Length: 335
View (cartoon, rainbow, N blue to C red):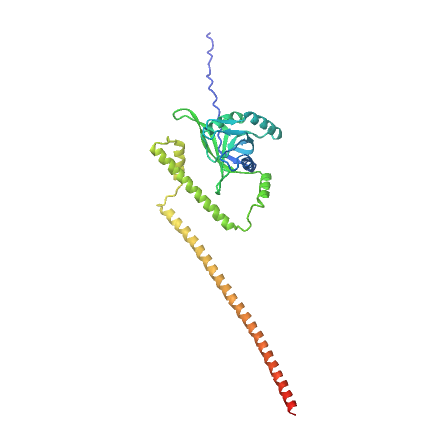
């Protein structure tokens, strides 16, 4: 009898699933702490401040829930010369961990308002402290001098770019401001004295629409500038960005479609009809107010005329009485 053949099964390596950050939620305590840090250290200067971000990662979303300042210095002329105190970072995180064990180091922030030449190098210094996943390390860029209605926060993560030479580059991540219920109560209390009661809701909505249109115009100019530089050869083509731009263009409606034209005309006619009816109502109300004012003026004039007639009649009776008295006195004197 021959020995049974033993089959060897080749074990395939298990490829770990890639974890990506799809969005970032910045909590109000982070924004307030960053502004306080800037006002204490670099107010009225060209310097920027740097700090460490703490938070959680859940279902592809990074929650920046807390932060603390880091000792940081850099040479304004040579961007390769800078100092970040890593020992201070370790000591501060150890103290924060005693208060809240759920919060981990998720990245860092700075207040330059845009990406700097040495940001990638600083990012590599902070990445090893991100215990959740070093690939999820977040860089939050804040513009503390922003004077527009736009959100002054931009979020980035780093990823390996393997086009020509492998190197890490920053990848933009959508960011919003979110808060827990307790944080919302605190923010409402802080904003209670800041809000201007004289500003109407309509003016606020118009300002928000204007800010949105200005932001859209700025983004479109950025897209045009990027495409021009790609066409001129200044930038290397990035297929991910090209796909995103194509997706945006695919969302535009077909203006030559008869159904779309008819629907747009119907909607325009409906809105114009509502505007026309509103103008008619305003005109009728204005006429009604005008008629009421005229009636009130007429009634007031009639009352004043009656009072004047009474006054005139009283003066006439007084004059006749005086004349009679004078005539009687003269008749008595003649007698």
